Image 1 (tube, rainbow, N blue to C red):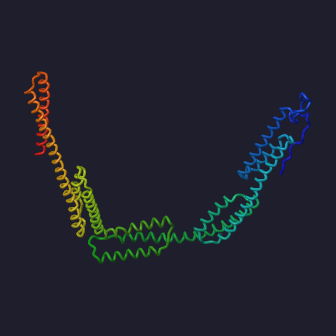
Image 2 (cartoon, rainbow, N blue to C red; image 1 turned 30 degrees about the vertical axis):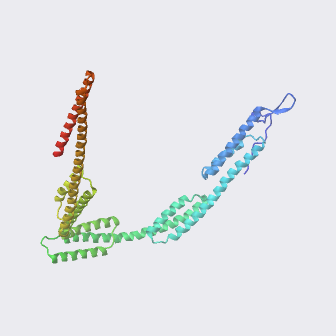
Image 3 (cartoon, rainbow, N blue to C red; image 1 turned 45 degrees about the vertical axis):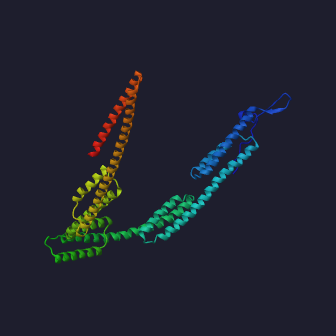
Amino acid sequence: MTLDNNPTEDPSQGADQPATATTDAKGEARPQADGQTALEQELAKREALCTEAESVAGEKDWRRGPSDLRRLADEWRSLRRWHDPREDELQRRFDAAREAFYAARDAAREDAGKKKEALAAEAERLSKSDHWKATGDRFRELMDEWKAAGTAGHEVDEELWQRFNKARRSFYDAREEHFKQLDAARAEAKAKKEALVERAREAAKTSADWKGVEWRAASARMKELMDEWKAAGVAERADNDRLWKEFTEARQPFFDAQHAHYNKVEADQKEAAEAKQALVDEARELSEAGDFSREATERAKDLDRRWKKLGYAGRELNDRLWEDFNKAKEGFWEKKRAYGEERHEEWRQRTEDAIERRERRISNLKEQTDHLRERIANAYATDHVEEMQERLDEKLDLIKQIEDEVKDIKSRLDD
């Protein structure tokens, strides 16, 4: 697939001629700089065309790829041939990219042909199936796989498509005929079920003075209606669902009347029992937590208020729940009282210790004042007497202050 390049042109033909030589000081020929630059520029263009061709080959876009490669080949042929060894290497690289693209395309077409052949064969096998749902789903999957298989070439694609589509149409035509027959049966089932709905509405009427015999007879009628419903067949799905809902709603007043009182009493007792059990658990949690703060105490008080609002929990549970609740909440109050007494005793001990410390200090200060008085009485220097008198007055003031503190603390201790 090597591309033909332009033949070497006459050196006299302007800008396309190869670089000419000039003579240096020794008389030796050397290439002109502008010719060398042109060669490098065109080699760079060929390098870029190789890179683009390799990119096209890598993308494997079978629709756009051929036109892109033709465009690149045209650009390649438009470049001048310099007979440089590097051109040959780039030529091989360019041809290799083109060959890789077409080889990959041929392989892809062959693979697509095998896939479509297998899909056509499977479609032909499925065309006789009467598993309408599963086979219909599979035919949709086959169509998705057909679209994803790629092209095997126009002629092969067309031949295999005719086989594949014929098999599909055969199945869909048979399925259509089957559902036409179903439609007639569903219309008949719809009419029967509409009549059953009306009969159920009539049969669901009850009376407050019914006895057991009436309830049993009405229950038997409801069972007969259900048996007829099951034997009536299946209508269209939307109709079937709607009619079943109407049939159920028509019968429901009978069952509601039969069980309403018992169900309500049972539900109310169950709800009360669950709520009381929750309060028992909460009371136990409070009792075991050891938290006697104001918030915890308010929660404990609120338990009684909430309990009083709850209803009867039934003969078997009500008394037991009350005993459990009372035991748990009394446990909290007993622990709170013990905790308060313990805290009060600790406070009293700390208070007495504080009084004792102050009294010891007062005693010490009084000893100091007695000593100062004695020194004042025996002093000769006036300055020293005045200084000692000031110290005495300060200590007497301090004694008075501490005595007042002791008096205040004792008054709080006696309260």
